[in-house]
Amino acid sequence: MGPDGHGRIRTFGFGPSPTDIFGRPHISSRPSQELLDRMREEIRKEIREDKEIREDIRKEIREDIRKEIREDIREEIREEVRNQLREEMHSELQTAVLVAVRAHMECPHVATANPSTSGQVPDACSSHRPQSP
Image: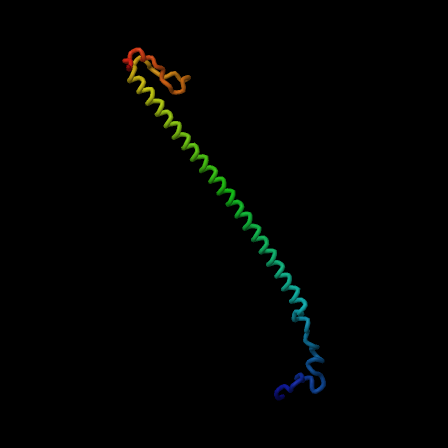
């Protein structure tokens, strides 16, 4: 038996060909162009949807970060205002104490200032001071 001849099957003789025995090769085993195009379009659609979802997530994250920053800034401003108010109150208190100490030094008979006189010390020692001409 020599080499196979083109288009013939060994042991079947000269009659049948491979197509007669095995049939035509299935063209449908390869995906059609239409199927490939459909699959590509589905993949493109999924990619677009994924991009939209990612962009939505980015927007939400950005908004959350902006809210946190706004809250942080507001809290910093509140704290700064509190500190300024404390400093002002401390300064006013120091001034009131200095006024009271000076008044006491000028006239030891006056122990404290009357709060209703808005920080003014009553002039209880006016009779003790020499009159200016």
